[in-house]
Image (cartoon, rainbow, N blue to C red; front, side):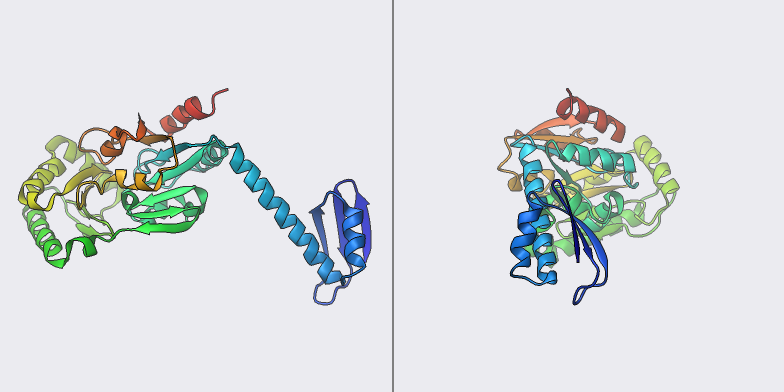
Length: 315
């Protein structure tokens, strides 16, 4: 084997090693000569390679720890998904992903959405639970930190099948009698910690979504339906949150809205929440109004970026 030493670098050209094919590896080291001679005296060539690899991984871990230490301590930027990081039910843009990476170098970053993790991943990418420090799906009823599951809550276990069946049956009958221009499929979606109800059906196309959103604004289809359900099931202590273009969330019991995720964030002294539906009845309202958060209303993903630059990245 041939060793070439340069300042703070080691080049190893492995011509032939026992279980390795020819390779050339560049690894950082502060004292290449000492490291090589100490290892060479007692170890085989494969062992030397292993030692150098371990040294490299250790260096990378230290660099990651140093980067984490540079973040503003005790500050969290927490984002809604639809209308905040992405256009409604659309995939996140490469520009937004790059901005989130930059922001994460300065503060801890999390996302909280009403959808389940599968749907959030469709919008923010399959690596979403590692792209952000915290990912709260279903309003935080399913919680991930640093890529690991840290908590779940089950609606079925909490309520039982009888009460769930009563609610679902009534809702389906209501939708069957509802007179709207079109209906598709999947009117009720049962999630781990909530029920999502869509008068038009979640199987509609994007064009049909856009049309229903306009129709709903003119005829208040969702607000009227929520009013009926709230009165009918007052004994269940429900919370209703209208979100997105075509549906609303039914959360059991009160308190299982987006504020639920705050129980995992006790270590933060300053939590900035960004959302587009912060008005009363919107699915961002409760966490926006919470005493635990500093609420910011945004109008689009571009507005989100501009507000974050002003708050976290200003010179």
